[in-house]
Image (tube, rainbow, N blue to C red; front, side, top):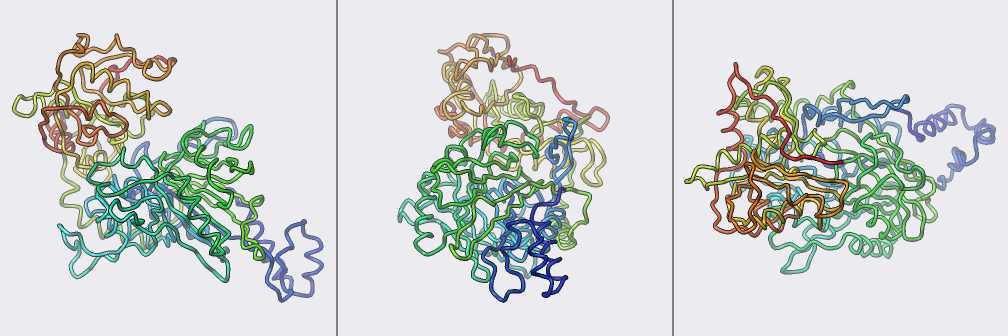
Length: 601
C-alpha cells in the first residue's frame, strides 16, 4: 500500500513538534508552501484541519474472507499485467481501518449501504446480528441503507438499528439481548406511505472539537424493483438528487457547511482494476452508469460522494452542477477494499476546501495480522452455526463459478436453473418446461477447496446457502411464447439496456445474444428455441423462477404477467436436492458447459 499524502503530512507535523518551539519558525520557513498553515506552537488554532474519511460499501455480511474468485481484487501491475489479490474478511478489515486511523485525530468511518442482506450463512442464519455486532466493533460511525437492508422489511431494519431479539426466533445466545447498531442507518429518501415521514434519520452530524461534518444517506430510487414486494411494503422511495439537495439546504441553514453524501447507487469504471485511474483522460471520463448523472445533479454544497451498489472500485472526480470536480468513491464489495479520503476542513468557513480533497482505495490484504476481537466474534457465531452449516450436500470436481464469472452465461447459473427445472418439472410440482434464474441472485462461487474441515470438493449447507442466501420460494407460472420472447428482450432493453441482466437458463433453451446490436434487438428473436424447436408465440409454456422474478423484479415486467401460479419449494432446497441427486464422493458434479447462449461481441 502506498503512503497516502496525509501520512507524509503527519510525519512533517511530528518533525515540527520534535524540533521544539524555538526552531519552529525556521522549519516552517523551510517547509513547502501550504504545509505551514497549521500554526504549530503559536498558541492559536490552525486555520485548517485534515479530517480522514474512511469508507466501504456492500459488505453483505461477509465476516469471513469471501471464498474463490469473489474474494479477489484485480490490481494492474506497473508492466500492465493484472494480478488477482485475495482480500477481505472483517478480521483484516478491522486491522486495516485501525492502522489507517493511527496519527489521524480527526477520523470518521462511513459506509455506502448493503452492510447486511444476501449474507453468507454465518451472518444470514442469525438475521445478520453478527454483522451489526462486527460493525459496532469496527467503529463504523454512519451508513446509508442499501436495497438489501429492506430484504426482510422495515420492521426488521428497525430492529437492526434499535436492537431486541428476533420476533420469531428469539435470542440466539442465552442471557444475551441483541443491542442493535450503535451507528445511525440513514434513509433520507425512504418515507412511510401513511405519514409521509422519513422511515429512519435522513442525516447525522459528526462533531469533534468544533469540526462538524454532515452525512446524508440515500438508497437507490429503484429499490422497489430489486427487492421482494414484502420488503418495501408501505414505503415510498424518492429521487436521490432531489432528496440530497433538500437536506443539504437544511444542513446549510443549520450552519453545517461540510457535507458528505452516502449513496447506495453506483457506476461502472472502464476497468475492473481497483487502481485504474477513472479521471483519464479527463475528470470522470473513465466511469459510466447511474451515479454519473446523480453526481452531476447534486448541489455543490455537498463536498464528496461515497457510493456503492455496483460492487465496483473507483475513485473519480465528476463535475458538480457548477462544473467543479468533486470526489466520487466506491470500494468494491465484501470488505475487500476501503477508501481513505482526506477532507481539509477550513475552520473559518466551516467548509471543506474542495481543491485539496485527496482519495485512494486500499486493499484489505490477508497478510496482515487478524484483529483478535473479530476472530473471537467469528468463532462464537461459528459454534452456533456449525450443526447446520457443516452438513455435506454434494460433491464437485472443480470450482463452479457464479458471482466470480463475468460471462453472460455462468456455469453456476446453469446448475441453478437446471436444479429448478428438475425439481419443478414433475406434473404435481408444477410441470415446468424451462427455468430462469436472475444473475444477481447468485451471490458466490461453488469453490472446490475446503472452507473448513469438510474436505476438498465437498459442498456444505453453509456453502450452498452462501450461493443462494435469500431462500426465495419457487413459482411455476403460465407464460405465452410471446411473453417469453419479450422477457428475454427485457434482459437488454428498458431499465436493463445500459447494464444488461442476462438470465441464467435451464438446459434446452438456446438463443443468440448479439451485443453489436442495440436494445431489444440484441436478443436475436429467430434463434430462440426450446429443445430445438422455435418458440411458438401463441403457445403456453410452464416457466419456473423464484418469487422475486415472478413478481417482475430486476426489470422483467413480462415475467410478472404469469398466470396459474403454483408455489414450490425454496430455491435453496431445490439446489441442495440437485447436488444430492447428481453427485457422489466418487462421481462429483463437474462444471457444466456454457453453450446455451451464443454471444456475438
